[in-house]
Length: 265
Image 1 (cartoon, rainbow, N blue to C red):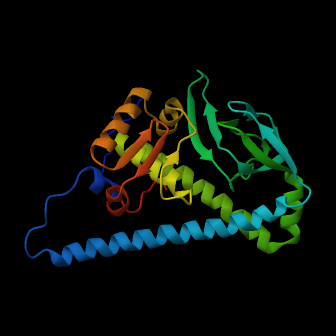
Image 2: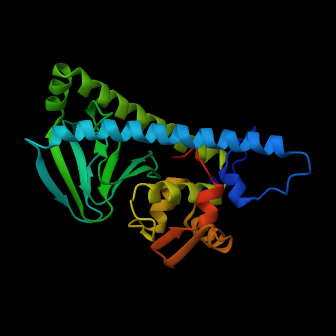
Image 3: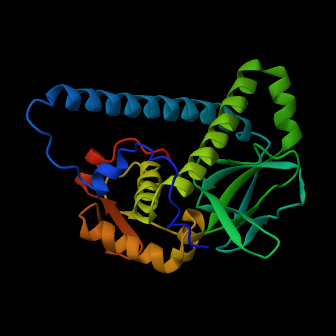
């Protein structure tokens, strides 16, 4: 279902809107207001940076649990890693590739809620059964270890338990931010936020390859494939992104300097 037409009851102040809908020049005498807005933007960037650093620290602490006693598993593109409703007894660390996490409703409609890449975990918030389905987007390599082994390690190590809790909280926060974006952002804003988030996981500042298809992006953003294609064209027309091929993009300076902190990060 295309949700791009949803209109919020109250506008949400997102810096991303400045890159898509540039404001008119400020009138003379408004330097103080402009400085205040800039300070708020800087504070948002600093908070996002702090959260990202804390999540990375927790992730490194958890990754140590997979250095010994874990098994390596390979999955071919579009193969199923785990199924919603099946017993959850294993935790996974993504070594390489991209994992598509999604849920299906009773009518078979799919909602993708995350694309996990290197350093992310599967099984952090699952107790008893898997509450979602995970599939390989491309060739995926995982490290697998029994969930009980992680639970026992957390009981012995308070620092590891805190890291586990911190990572679980960051997962929940990402879900909440995605929900906000689905309700309050239009198609172009959702797509730009997704591209910035995805590019932010890579160290390169050049072109980034999208391993997922357009229909995957559509199911993640709550849009139709046609709307996603139009959004790509509009972002390119507004010089916010450049496309070398349909799968390779890079963010242009206007996107990085004007969009600032996105709620969906």
